[in-house]
Length: 118
Image 1: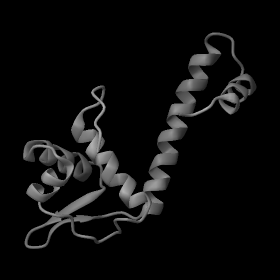
Image 2 (image 1 turned 45 degrees about the vertical axis):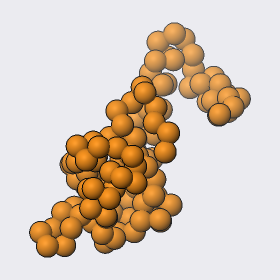
Image 3 (image 1 turned 30 degrees about the vertical axis):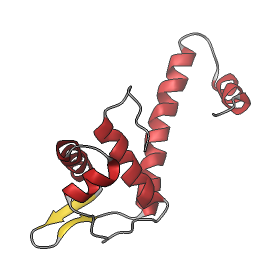
Image 4 (image 1 turned 60 degrees about the vertical axis):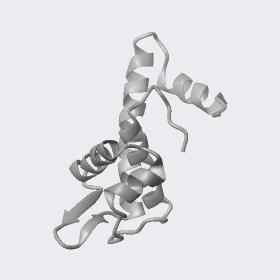
C-alpha cells in the first residue's frame, strides 16, 4: 500500500480496512489478525496499527472481546450508509461554500457532473 504524506498513516490503514468491509472482503464477525501481523502486512509500526485499531473501535467499525480478539462489528451495507452520510456533509459544505460566491445549487451540480475524477 502506498501512503499519502498529507494524511496520517493510521487513517489510511483504517480506510483500507473499511474499504475491505465495504467490498465484503471482511464481513461482520470476522476476526482480524493480531496487531503484529497487521502491522507487518501494512508495513507500519505496531504503534501505528494500535492507533488504527483504536480509531476503528472508537468509530464502531470493530470491537474487541477478551479471549476472542478483534472483530468486525458492522456490515458492508452499514459502511455504505456511513459513507453516504459523510458524502452528504461534504456536499452540504460544498454547496454552502459555493453559495457564498454566488454559485447556485444547479450550477454546482453542473460543475460536478462535468468534472473528471482521476
